[in-house]
Image (cartoon, rainbow, N blue to C red; front, side, top):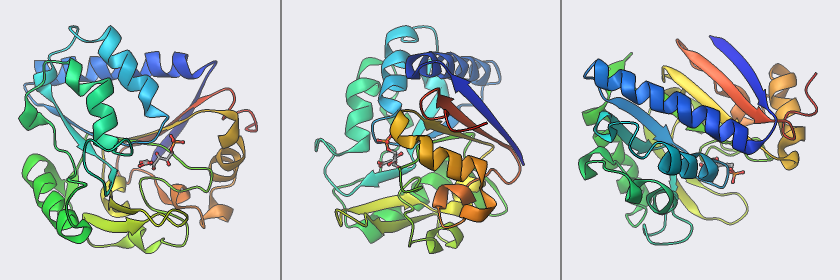
Length: 243
Ligand code: 6PG
């Protein structure tokens, strides 16, 4: 259960490095004729990564060799400004040559519980399994200032142990319903990459990375790939309280 931490001078340096590494992974998937399965998070942090991928890697990779999934989705229609899929479509997917069947969005417009079941089946159809759970090649996560990740919020730690692949969650402040991957599925990934930037995240980063065991009240402290790699990619601002 290898955990590494990398600090970058700026969020752009981080996004450019990760975009380049993801492009290498897609090229390797093409050489191996085995498409990559990548689960994306939403929110603000990954927007820079998506823009860099669309601007700098538009033609440098064969996008037929990646399948995009989502870690979580707000229960809104895809054209809603809140939609994680909608944001990714605008910044990345709409500008690249990728078969639509390689894009596995969560139907935010659906009933959340019905969608959690439907999406679980879709994931099982398009991923390999280990320990009877789906295995994503890569899961990209963010972390909120409250230590949530995906849509697993403090006070909802049972989602870390759920036997379901996806479950419904409720944002503790807005009450917004979400569909989210559960903790066991995230930890079953071959590679987990946390992207955390900005000075507002420095405190929670030092709590979760610096004192993980004492801070298991934070969902992100429970996320670590069981059999693969976990890396935290931080900019200087988010990592400035770490020794
Ligand atoms: C979401 C994300 C969520 C996000 C964190 C961090 O649907 O909002 O999946 O888990 O990663 O809330 O969000 P920011 O990147 O906007 O700080």
